[in-house]
Image 1 (cartoon, one colour):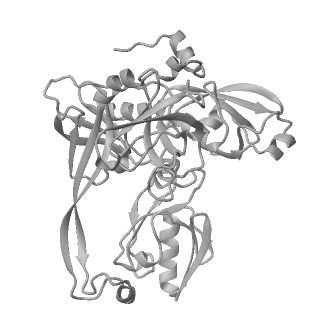
Image 2 (tube, rainbow, N blue to C red; image 1 turned 180 degrees about the horizontal axis):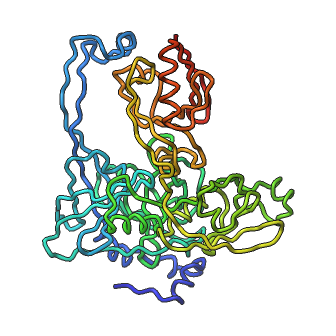
Image 3 (tube, one colour; image 1 turned 90 degrees about the vertical axis):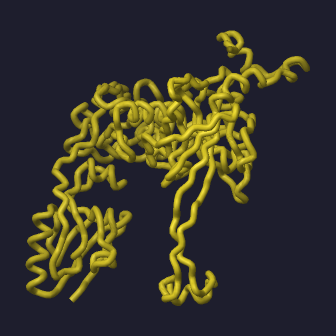
Length: 459
C-alpha cells in the first residue's frame, strides 16, 4: 500500500523542477486503485416495430409508424460502462444511466473474475446507482471515497474506465474547474471538471486523486463528435456518499429523500451586489419562502443573501441545492447569511419536503375533457417528485391514460389553474367545477406547463 504523507502531498502540488521529478510514474497509484475498478455489462430486451416501409423516413412521416403490416420483434440490447467497488463485501457505485432498464448485469474485475450484480438503488436525480454482488464471503479489492472539498484547480487526477469497450484504461489530467453548475446533466448540476480523457464507456468510473482516493464518479463529457475533447465532468464524492447512505438505510429506486430548504432565490450578480453593498457577487438572494419550510422556522427572510452552508461558500442556487442535498435528514445545518450588511448564522434542520396538504390522488372520470387523468393536491413533496417549484399550491396532473381524452390535452406535471373562470386550489374545487361544466357543455381550462400558461376551450 502506498501512503503519501502531508509533506509528500504538499510537494505533489509543486511544479516539477528536475528531470527526475518529471519521470515520476503513476504506476504505484494505478496498481493500488485499478483492482477496485470494474467493467459493467448490461442486457435488456427491447421491442422494436419492423416497418413495412423499411424505415424510409419519407413514407414513415405520413403514417407515424402506425400503418398496418408492421411486426413487433424483441431484440437484446447490450451496453457497457464502468463502476468502482467501494466496500469489500461487493458494493459497487456507477452511473444510473449505465444500468437504466437493465435486466441482466455482469461485473468484471480487472483480474478477469466475473459476478452477476443487482441494482439495489438507482437515483436518476444524481445519475448514481448502487449495485451489490454476491461475493460468497470473499473480500474484494475496494477504493476509498474521500471528500472532494480539498481539491484545487490544477491538481493532478486520474480517470479509470472502459472506453469504447477496449478494456480498462487509465488517463491523466488536472482538475480544470470546480463547482461547474450550468450543464443540465442531472438535477443537481454541480460537477468537477477535468481534462483527463473520458470517452463513452468511462461512465461510472472513478476520478482518482493523488493520494489514491476516489473523489468523483465520471459521468459526462462535452463533445461534438462523441470523443473526448478534454472537457469531462465528475459527480463529487460527497453526493456519492449520500446515495450509498440512502441505499444502506433501505431507500428504494427513485426514492432517495433529500433535505428541503423551502426557499428559492437567484444568484447574486454584479449589479445586485452593488445594490446590496456587497464586496463580491456571490451567494443566493432569497426571493420566496414557503410557509411550512425549515428555512422560515430558522428565521430566514426574503431579501437575505445565503453565502455559506456549514462553512462551505455558496456561489449560486445550484451550489445551494447541492450543499443542502449532502446534509443528512434530521441533522442541523448552519446557514451563513447577509442581512442588511450584517453577517449572521441561522441553524436550520435538514428535513424532508412534507406532503401538506395530502396529495389525495384522484382519478377523474366522466363526460369531460379530463376523463382519464389522475390529479393530486400540490405539496412540497409532490412538487419535488415532479420537478416543480416547491412554493406552488393547487392541483397537478400526476398521471394520464393516453388512450382517453385527457391524454390528448394534459401531461404529468401540468398545473390546473382555472376552469370556466373559477380558480382551482384543491381537488374538491376541480371536481365541483367539472360537474358544473358538464351541465353547461363548455370547458375553458387554464393550465401551466413548464412555466407557461395556456387555455384549452372545448364545447
